[in-house]
Length: 401
Image (tube, rainbow, N blue to C red; front, side, top):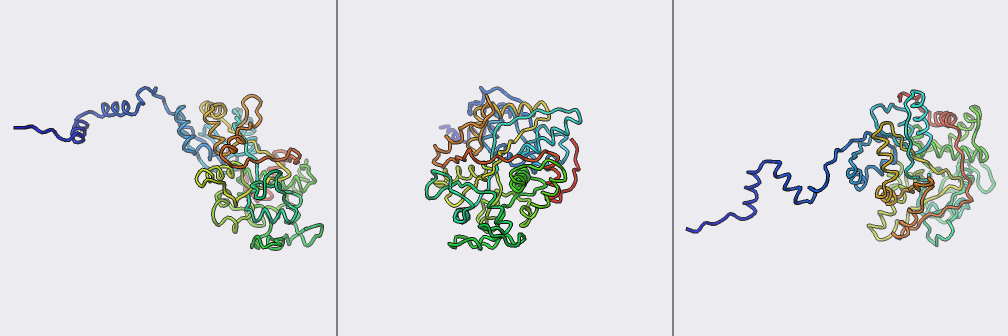
């Protein structure tokens, strides 16, 4: 009698059922080629982060970190909220700007618990808008196309003084009641926009967000004659003076970048304060998927500029190891570029030109801001905190280092 063998697939399943689990795992490792990789203990890093979570929650970054033995568990909250609450039990905190990092460093120093600071990349504060609104501001003489950007530019320079004048009811030298700031449909001569909202830049919650606090500092600098207040009385007076320019339309706590990129963005918030990397990441992804950048979304670079210095604050030894890794590892730095960040040179700490090269290769226009723009100076940390609390009606600090 002829003996027939079961099909190969059935035979493999029978053998697998008869083998102990470790042997099956060994077979899988051999088949995948991972048997030759050294076994590495994975360290879970507990982290509080604001907008820079975009980097750590990127799947490619997660894989690269795993290769080095790190898994980062992110608790998401605003930069100032990070500094205001307790960060006991965390390895790193990564607020989006220097003021919040300074708050944390100061509190840790008072408790005799030093920190390590790392600055792996930078991302300027920008005002994101839509082409029709940018062209309306250009026709008004408030915005200007960046040189060499063609007929349909992606980047504009915004005259902050003139922009704030519109919000205060001043147009072309004529002042009306400051409480009656101009609305978009009042300055639109060519029917580009149909929006009755006041002309303001919307931010995230100023009590929580570094971008909102930084924009407050920009507005205060311009309103104070391109100078920062230098005493408490002056700072408090200025905060009350500029409050209508920041809270007239409310301070939503939702992520401004997500609102801006949504289909409803133009009607909800024509101009929003975000970080440059959030805009560029969208354009890089759009170009990869659609073959061209998003033609309708554009950036306004304030003529009065302040480049944010996000600082990863390492609270433990493992946190310091992570900070060194993302600051020095070439693969992680290259991925930061692909996500729209401007990496810093390891030698002198300045922003490198890697982002410009990458955007050019991907057929995405690269921003080239003028070196003649005024650089804003933020108030000292204590004065800025006072101003934020006045403008946002913020609650007092409840946490501890």
